[in-house]
Image (cartoon, rainbow, N blue to C red; front, side, top):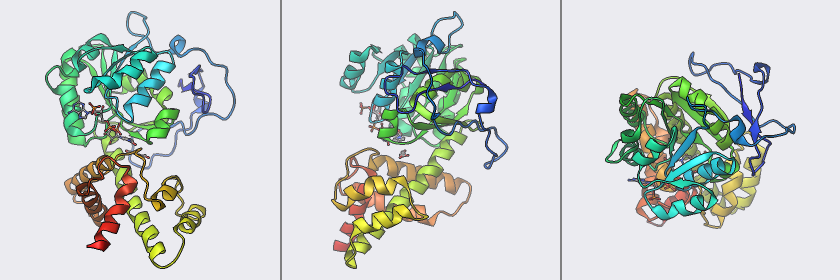
Length: 355
Ligand SMILES: NC(=O)C1=CN([C@@H]2O[C@H](COP(=O)(O)OP(=O)(O)OC[C@H]3O[C@@H](n4cnc5c(N)ncnc54)[C@H](OP(=O)(O)O)[C@@H]3O)[C@@H](O)[C@H]2O)C=CC1
Ligand SMILES: O=CCCC(=O)O
């Protein structure tokens, strides 16, 4: 197997490719069913000498370097597309609000004025949209990407959506003869900037292999999980856990303060014990100061909890903790905190106590 690897924390993407023998690629034991999972756990700690990405990038049937489209340039899409451009990829961008394309055009990206035109002018097109509705609209709506798709092309949806939405998009893309991969990401704004995302992919295996070099520019590891829907489900499970963890952490911080403890000590104690999580150490100090600089918008966390609860209901799985957490995020949204970081959910608990 060939892996594209990059120097840890290398921002200039002089990155890249090195053919590694399969002995470098640990195949982890399968714990979620009998599907193959390809896992590259961390970037190597040794130094490599790199060639420009384009030398090793996947080629299309005419032997030309693949042209990459990127739709959706929000908090995540912008740094992801930026990393592709900086690595030397041929990138064409589109965003509903056109002004967000400008910084990427300045970096060397091309621009097309609709998802259809991006898809028509590129070999593979990535999409990073807000939610199921926008993902569907951009892929399947008027002048949507599907209208520009044809055999030999591929569509990679990296948005967080539910499995039903992903299957609808997949069906529409595949109608055109193109291939489809869902590839939602774990990791937030900073991992996106640092090319340290975790891709949870499912769908056409050959497209997964084709876009692997691009995933490796944007991420630190990638999982192939089988049929369309499995990547979406994995992402929702992970974010359901995360949403509940943040809600529980918020309760702990507020309780500690009420009983006369220093919540900064709580952050430190938690960080040294079995329930330590990078998220607590990263966001706790700002939460204590009632500051919520946005990395992962609260409205998206609530969307993910809503979708995860739907997923749980579809298989009759009881999820009372996530359901309670979801209510808190809904309260936070109703108090105008949608665009703050999801750690602002703590404000919902403060508000509750004041009622
Ligand atoms: N932020 C994070 O930490 C992470 C987010 N995610 C997921 O990634 C996705 C994107 O997140 P993020 O970048 O934070 O979100 P943002 O809200 O920053 O960006 C959303 C993007 O979707 C576009 N969009 C929204 N509605 C429409 C529409 N109707 N038609 C066309 N485009 C639309 C926006 O365009 P415009 O600029 O015009 O508004 C923007 O490009 C979400 O699914 C989120 O859950 C996954 C991992 C981490
Ligand atoms: O979907 C958002 C995930 C945020 C994270 O993994 O830190």
